Image (cartoon, rainbow, N blue to C red; front, side, top):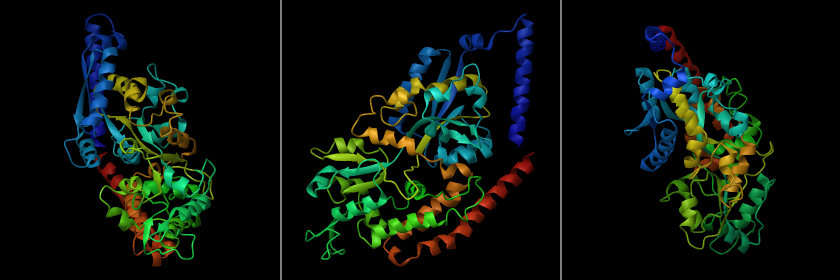
Length: 461
């Protein structure tokens, strides 16, 4: 693209100017000496709020103690949609030197010319051995088409929150690794209770008068449901990222959708999506009040709420095995480098520091780190341990297979498939018919967006 050519011309000119300057004084300064003697400013683009930026600042302070010549400035999100802002900055050639990236957007940012391939840096003099530092299944979420473009800041797996007191009152043992979706349904039926005290296994159970649900679901959050799809033995897009037919509408995907649809409408063990959305504060207050016994497929974002609820006894359970085994989908954020950065070597030093020990000792205070060494104090923790164990079962994300997956499939599928099937009107909807009716529209969206991008690249070259 045009901006790429300008960048190349600029870099060539910069190199020539540097060579002339070095020759004028009779010798070449080694790159490391220049980095030590010169003062360089690196910008870091952050979507975080004040609390999140506090961790960035702490990590930056440690980094600058080691590299006092590199000054780091945080560019906070001024408001609005971060993704739209990044695309605007890519088009204008005004990206920060490094910036935060959600894994779902890596393909689009790469194809738009907004991310540097980090392989030369990782394998270079100031690089590292990823196999010695990171969980492979987490680290690889920064890849696109086999190359690393983003290094991990933090991540979240999903698990099952369980009300330990309700389990004990029903005489149910807490499930362990290896339990299944059949086990989940059986337990949820025992924990779903009507106003007369009948659970969902009783012939006298009244589904119109439920006071305690056995479980919930993630409604229109497609990423949350991908874990179930993967565990039923499917992905929703071909591995080469071109085709939805045979994947989004596969028998395994449909079976996963029908399982949760039945949990809501046939067995009545989970509330409708409408019910959950109508609750102030979402599902967690219902869980803490004992109205929902299990929060299904949720990330580790509610530890503070649990700790702030005196006397509440909980357990974190592994995700169940489906017909396809135990699989999971990750929520992942990291840092990437701008192709227009004029100080890529210094930007790399900061990026590497944030993804490894300097940054991870701060980011891991509130989240999971891709570095096992940073998780040693959490491995046996009653809250964190299960989320860490789920790393072993992560599948590659469908989102990383096509630049337009989230826009054309993930977001609309959540709104038009899961939210509908698990909503108030979902009982009488055929899951396969619904998916097949929407699939051509999703496929056309991906194809057309790809054609627009290709045309734009040709016009600018």
